[in-house]
Image (cartoon, rainbow, N blue to C red; front, top):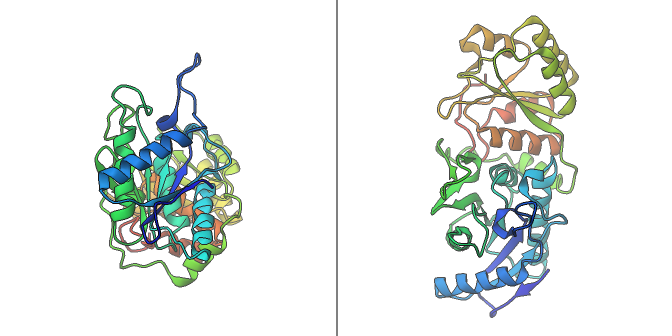
Length: 349
């Protein structure tokens, strides 16, 4: 792991480079991922130190695969989280702990990876900041350098732990953020407020999440409600995602899933132990399954109400808890509880 030190006693920052538009280069086939970015990152770190007016030490870590983030799979975000955990553990053992971490990531799945990292590293006590770019480093009008500087400042200056996203001049909570634009500099938004951290992660859950580091990523995914969605598609989704399925519903949790055929498919999956979590596609408001008859039918067969979780946070939370070994009623209870500020505290639904 390359490391630059300016002196003892200075802040230390972990930099994780994962790929994405930030370091891409032009090719005949379009933009492709740049893997050898060490010199550019070193220059950026020096510029960040000068801008801050105070030196800091830093170390670079990279996952095994440097990718366009559109190529992320079930385990990609967890591999990033495990890499951060491993490097932080090594630094602690050397009595040179990191004060923060910056993760450079592609924008397409940045919100997914940031939310996943927030749950997978909920037991750590450093600030972790994800960033990226809409236009590659070095091209006219690039936003890469500004986002990188803002991420370094946020990682070193923010008090306390947690995962956030620095992008377009703003710092957003990872468990509330979504990508809203493929063109604008302020590509991400957090339309739902971060909830109180008073509902702390239970100690046994914190330990279970930490103990699951290194385990494979559970096969968790999402199916979005559209008019006329057939039961065959629901069956296929449950076969593809046997460890958990998020249903992105209309409004308060209504969906075209209340036909006898689809309900039978869902009931069979729930009885097999596949957790099914309902969220709303609305920008505001929360799921309340019993409000309407179609939602009540889902509730009756065991679908879990996901309050006002974003789709990204819902997938991340379900995957993290499944990797930690949770199932059944204990999993249901944790999914309906605000653990790290990701959802509004509601009555179980």
